[in-house]
Image (cartoon, rainbow, N blue to C red; front, side):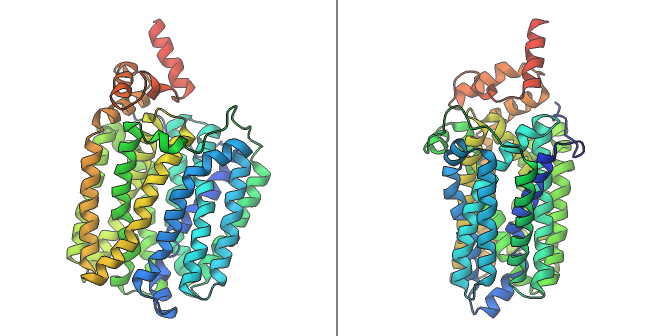
Length: 435
C-alpha cells in the first residue's frame, strides 16, 4: 500500500505560501495562551475553571461558526472569506490584549473564534486546490503549517508572556496583520461556486456515516487533547517561559510526525492501524498523567511525548475525512470541524468542574476514557479507512470496487466516495480500465 506522494514545500505558488503562513499564525493561537494560563489565574484573580473558558469560548464559537463558513465563502469567494476571517482575528486578539478582566478576555476570544472558523475551513480548501504535488501532498503541507504553528505558539506565548500576559495577544494581532497583507497581495481572486452552498449543508453531510464516524472519533480525541492542553500547565508549576519551552518541545514532535512520521507509518501499516496505535498510545499517556499528576518530571515527559500522537492523528484523520466524505471537501471540512471543535471546547470547562469537584487527577483519567471511546468509534469505520488507503494507492487493489461498496455501506451512492479524488488518480484508474 502506498501512502501517496508527499508534496515538497518548495516550488509552490506564492498564494500557497501566503495561506500557509496565515495557517501557521492561526494555529499559534491554539497553544499561545498555554504558558500564561497560571499567570492569568493569579494576576486576574480567576480560578483555573474560569481561565479554561479561554479555550471553551474560542473553540465552541469556532465549532458553531463552522456551519456557516461554506454559506459565506460560496457567496463572496474563498479569498474574501479568508481576508474577513483574518481581519476578525486581528481585531479580537488585539481587544483581548487590551482587556482588563478574565470575562473580557473570554468574550474577545469568542470573537477570535469566529474569525478562526472562517479562516480554517477555507484555508484547507484553498491549499488543496492551489498546491502542487497532489492531494496527499497538500494535506502534508497543511499539516506542516499546523505543526509549525502549534510548535511556535507556546514558545512565542512563553517569551511574550514572560514580559506581560498581554504580550501573546498583541503578538498574534501583529502577525495576523502581516498574514492578512500577504493574502491580499499574493492570493488571486477566487471564483465563486456555480451554486451557493445552503446553510444546512454541513449538518446534512453528517448524515453520511463515513463523515459522522470520523467526526465523532475526532470529538472524543479532542476531549482528551484539550483536557491535557488546558490543565497540564497547572500541576507543572513552571514559569511562563519554562512552560513555553515544554510545549515547544511538544510542538516540534507534532510538526515532525505530521510531516514525516505519519506518511511513513501510513505507507507501512495503513491508515487504520496507524491511527489505532496513535490513539492507544495517547490513552496510555493521559492515564499516566492522571496517575502521576503530582510528579513533575513524569507529567512533562508525557505531555511532550503526546506530540507524537497529535502529529500522526492530525495528518491521517484530516486526509481520511477529505477522502471518505461523499460531499464536497469544503462542506466536509466544515461539518468535521463543527463536531471536533465542540469536543475541544467543552472538555476544558468540564475538566475544570471535575477538578473542583474531585481533584486534578480526575480530568485526565476521564480524558483517557474519551480517547478509548475514540478508538471504539473509529473501529466501526475500518472498511471505510481501507477504501481511503486504496484511493491514495492510485488504483491498487481494485479501489473503485471497494470505494463503491463502502459508499453504499456508509450512506453515499455507489462511487460517491470517489467524486472528489484528484484528477491524476482518476486518470490512472481510467488508464488501468482501458488496459
